Length: 490
Image 1 (cartoon, rainbow, N blue to C red):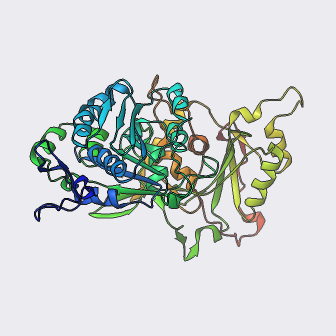
Image 2: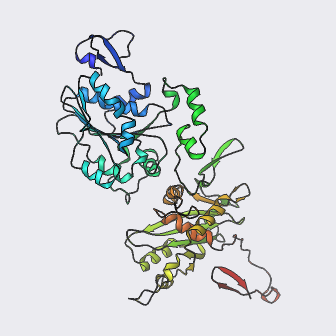
Image 3: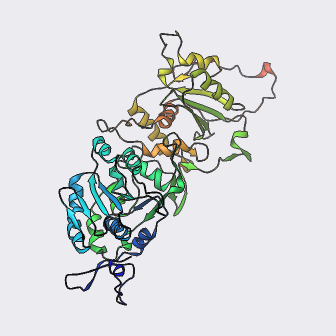
């Protein structure tokens, strides 16, 4: 699509047909923009409702997005688009620094007061920012054929969802409304953007209207931008440290401020990548499936909740060497304590459950009933042991389990098929800005439940072998009494 073709002017043989060309003041053809190979893919995509282009800094993502808007506006008379940055200073330093000159070349004009680009065919481009909820509300009454979020991870996911709903086309246009976004893999909503566009594991509770088939992504690396001085680019960004370097130089998705940076689903060991904290299948013990061994000790952990916070339960198998595998999770919304306990009992059938570590608030007596949630659990056969609600201690306990290596494997592993929410939320946990030792509040229900177990006292499983000695010849057993979270011999 070129401005020159629209006027019936043939293109020179050495010009890429995908270029945007204009006539200058001397009626000479001038190449205004030639897309990169990845840029061509973006401009040719008319069928993906939501497309994210992502990668390291300096790869031309913003330029691709702005010219995608230009080309669609020139192609379809009356087309309306919106380009957003999180703040007005960011908008001025990026798109607004180019738009006035570009509109002049395209035969249109840019109104600085309105921040609106006017095209000669009646199309319009709106440039705005979105810092507050009030900014969101100002945009919700409008409709656009195309909405572009530049640096999407700087917006909140709620902003993205609400504003995206303004992408609508008129009936009979033969087109679909488009949302396009570009981002470096670093920012406050990195975790949410990953869920929507990369891993596509948005739960119905988070967004009941989410359809993974409507979301696509395209990676653009430094080598995809032929105009970039790679040597100077890498030299400058290589001075960065930690997650910023990985995101801006390598294009690696990193959750800024993540608490559990020691959680590695996979790890390179002896030159080979292998499952580490996340495993795809349970191990066998003496030739039998793990859970088929009647002597394997199972621990549970429970976090209370009702609505909007769910109640959560985890099931953890402790191996003979002391390693633990979280192999099952479940959660309940708007379900009373007694019914949650009934489900937990039912789902634990056939397991040798040793203990259930629980949210200490479950032991608080309710004034209107004179009973605590723990009483209802006890009635349904689920005895609870109180854990701790110290968010610094929780984080430290999980760190210790993640970082301890036993027999060449981490002490704590999680079964992928059994615990999707725990695997999803664990790397999303943030450090508390006021106290980095603590896990910041958020969608932390599964992680908090795991912490109850990690803070508790668990013992390795021991295979039970029936004794063949007569009772009178056996050694007298020592009684064990439980006090709090520790075992004491008396």
